[in-house]
Image (tube, rainbow, N blue to C red; front, side, top):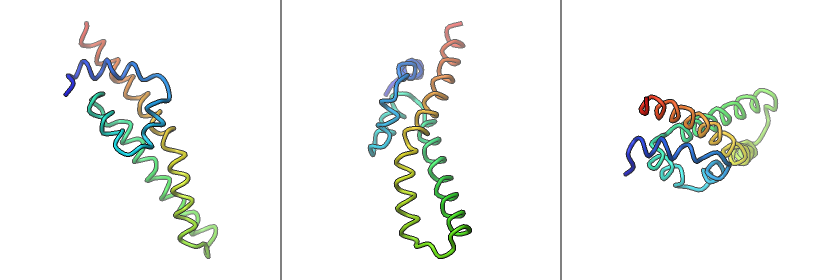
Length: 108
């Protein structure tokens, strides 16, 4: 298990898109959460895809009343896979900023 300071420092290394795309692989978010000491990317991804599913289902029912449920499910799955790296990247960037603030506070 990593210490808080080491976890905050590890977050600063995540400037690229590697872990963002890796969040599509099951279990990677658990490793990331343990080594970086944050659940923020998971929360952003889970919350964003949940909201995406709600919006797709709600507006599909209103705009296309006779749409097949299987079609909505397929659209949701494809959309959530596409959205996951972008949502994870947003969460990683947020966690990096918070980690940097905590590191600055700890060193001063």
